[in-house]
Length: 171
Ligand SMILES: CC(C)(COP(=O)(O)OP(=O)(O)OC[C@H]1O[C@@H](n2cnc3c(N)ncnc32)[C@H](O)[C@@H]1OP(=O)(O)O)[C@@H](O)C(=O)NCCC(=O)NCCS
Image: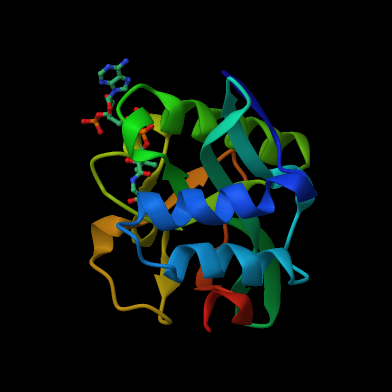
């Protein structure tokens, strides 16, 4: 299996993959399209997992902001991640997340936020974001599903604030 940045020729396969992985609904596939067309899109951080010339997984990491009184910090939001149903539970998702973290760090970003399953993400270093003092007002979610991963050591020290997803996250 190879993990690489998405190319234009992959867009259709990435759309279908997201539809399939999310139980045949199009919300996440359309979210990918909106983020891709937005200023928050970082081409290197739209990654696909390819096996025998087939796209079996996709992860998208894009820009978001934390508003801390009069300051804004640029951070990364992970959403969505999808693995083709027949290829789930074989480590594809884990490899996409690890490569996503590695590339995000390489680009100089210090933290990744997400809303996700509390039993899946902690093994990659994600912890409940509210324990760091971060707030989320745009989505009403339980504390344990709003998570953050500090990918540059010490990056989250001495500041906090409200995570704001950009307009592209809302249709
Ligand atoms: C969430 C999702 C991306 C995970 O992808 P995945 O490739 O299945 O993830 P992994 O294989 O890395 O891990 C899934 C489970 O399989 C297990 N696993 C990993 N490799 C395995 C292997 N070789 N054999 C058996 N099990 C394995 C993992 O331990 C993990 O179990 P755990 O969560 O109990 O620890 C995928 O299930 C998916 O697309 N779901 C639908 C869309 C979705 O809900 N996305 C997340 C919200 S944005």
